[in-house]
Image (tube, rainbow, N blue to C red; front, top):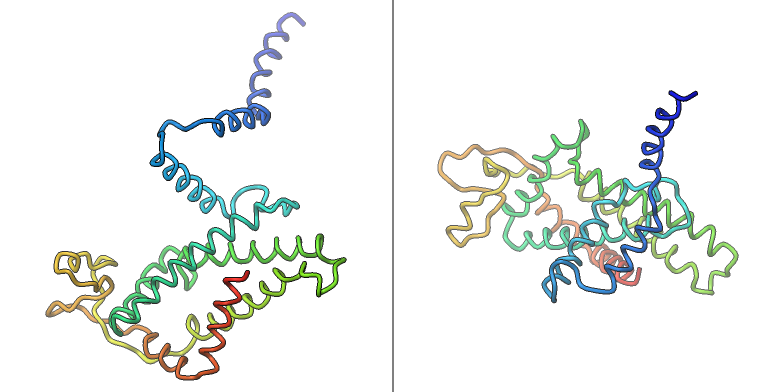
Length: 251
């Protein structure tokens, strides 16, 4: 009995170490919120804003609260922030269409060259993470809609997010069917050896995704440049995509 006491006391710190003191964490947060951080002024404010924003994006899927589907909105907000950033990047990427077929098709082939990161699937890790974030957003949103808005009438306005979300989900499936999985003509171009053509920055040219050096190795890629022009020759599809942009802004 005398020898057993030290063993018990030695095990106690291990047990204490496993239980986090969340009260202390909240207290520390309150102290931080009352004053400036280690980087003062507006520079520190911007730094901590970006740092917090990136943290929310990084923890879009993996935190426990997202997996357990509690009534907390963290699963919605984090996935929404990540999807919002993706929409901005995707919209900027689509501007490459104004630089011609080589640049736009090379931009599309850039993501194909990252398929090795997709764990054996015909997709890269960014596409897979976006898919998981979108599924998380949809599932948590449906659960919250069922719990909160199920007893309200349709004209109460409580179902607006659900209706716009279903509309956007329909648009996304059509958009993927058209551009991600649609059949295209082949287009021949020379991709840069190392994913990006950084030499173009020295010549004040913006062809990051293709090269025109003599003797370059060419490949055939999907001609999404031609596909885009063929689809948007239809006024119906133009109105459909414009409506989706409006719904996204409202959502």
